[in-house]
Length: 147
Image (cartoon, rainbow, N blue to C red; front, side, top):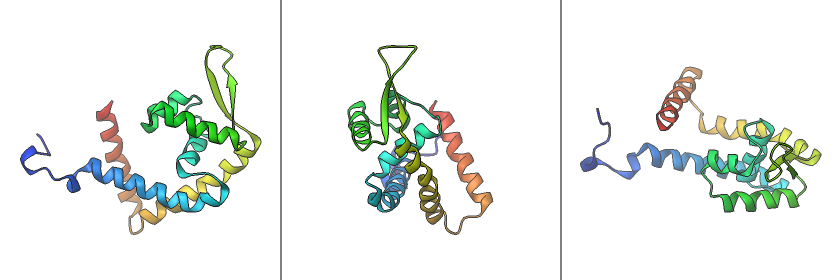
């Protein structure tokens, strides 16, 4: 059964539009907190992504965050220039470069989960644990449908 119909579709009622706006709100909140540390929310997300072992290549980041490879390369270049990341030639594929956190990057990344938790807790104000679990389950189902 189709839950959306073309003849009654309104962008402001679209789950996709709401998720896009929510992502922007999360990033804006995180941006305010991490700006004094010299990084953006998008850069912080890359650092956490690498620290948590989600991936260690620019292509991984581009795929999972739906960024174009050019913007990922520019963000990585900035993080390298700030001394937070380094590029290391992959031992298995000499053509490929892996990304690693520097000691400075590890120190900063250790502070980022608290920032993310505050941002999410602010947006989840008034939610119960059961509602959060349900929301995560529903989003997980949507992601599974996308694959």
